[in-house]
Length: 95
Image 1 (tube, helix red, strand yellow):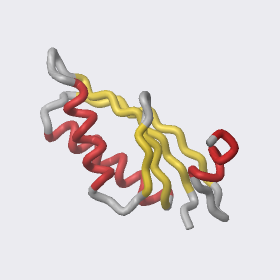
Image 2 (cartoon, rainbow, N blue to C red):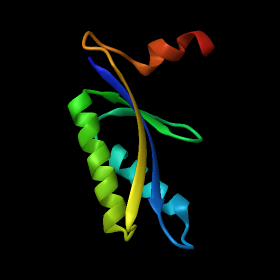
Image 3 (cartoon, one colour):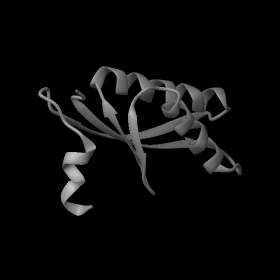
Image 4 (cartoon, rainbow, N blue to C red):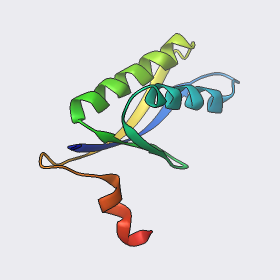
């Protein structure tokens, strides 16, 4: 069972380029993994083991750099519960 939820907003510094194409590439990094995720207007939330999620964040930043972004800001929120946590349990009363 997942022990963490991690939400990330990744903001690559790019001049006069389509920022959304970079965001699409960042999401593609997540898609290439086995983690459950959900895309929202201002951030993407992933569910999994904390160590794995942090490695994905690292890969996302490295991807932005490989695409030519000279710097990247990653705003990250983490909910950690060793006994387990899911996105569904946090939002079920709203759906």
